[in-house]
Image (tube, rainbow, N blue to C red; front, side):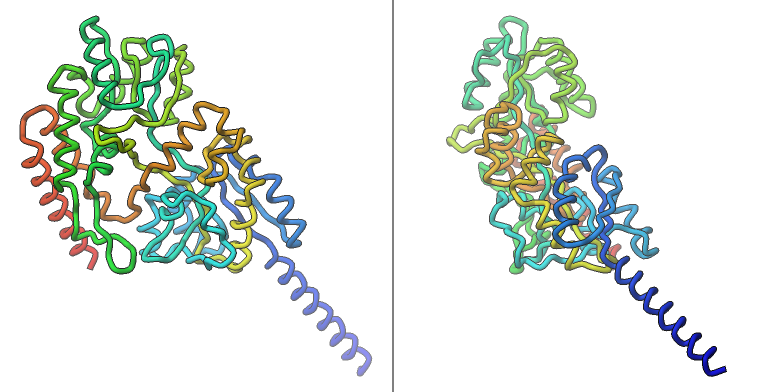
Length: 410
């Protein structure tokens, strides 16, 4: 009987030990959600990480803009990722809802990134992600119409005026939307939100109607008032009209993003790409920066290992490999001058412009800006209202909508 009990005890101990061993082994796994058709870019980095840390990394692809929504369900259920990819404009809502874990700044080498890209993943001085790739507006021109892109916006205006005499168009841009006109508004002194004492945004301080913003809109207005732009590019269908005029080779240049490269190429346009031109005061046009970044789920069982993974795969040698595989522009300052990007006209233009751009605020209140700002721009640029009056009205409308939104969330 004693032998049976002893045997049972030994078996129980062995079983418990095996279970603990399995649990320990299971803990040394990381689940990573990567963007669609982008996991090939981190394959080499993952293999090196697994070898160095004796860990298994499981990768699943899904559209990056939908990952947070899936995390809301999968995270609490225990089947979510440790690391995922999100766009920076979703950061604010995710932090407020407690979906993401803050990162420990030690060992993150944040100085290797362009300031705008790393700041895109900060909230109230806390870092929640590391930038993976950036995209922003650039100038795309038809090489059959323009030998070399003009350096200044004024030169583009003068050239465009000459083209109108030939019933052609020079430069076209969707300046009646703040996403496109921001390139002039910000450098000339406008801003979306002021800063609070924590380094975050002060949503009570809106800068849409500051003197610099009024000056910028007044300057852009002449593209419409002087018949440089056709009326058809106004409103919701304006982008389609711009694309059509460029692909039909009736416009010499457009301000658009990297997402237009493939359609323009498919349309047979021999195009070049350059950073945005400079403004009358000599400052280069800015733009909104879209940033994809790696973040850590608040439900991760090993946040320290997840952070090590993010830091590891964003070492320069792996970032370069990722760029070659995916062609997504990395926001590492060292990569801007790397021959693999510098010698690629498209990539170089995006990289240079991205360094001049500012990240779109990733706070929920930003959603209340688009409608009033776009309405004010259309009123101003078409001459239906003076720029100052239209922007004053937009600022009041944004304030009212933000106050209503914040009140409903209390």
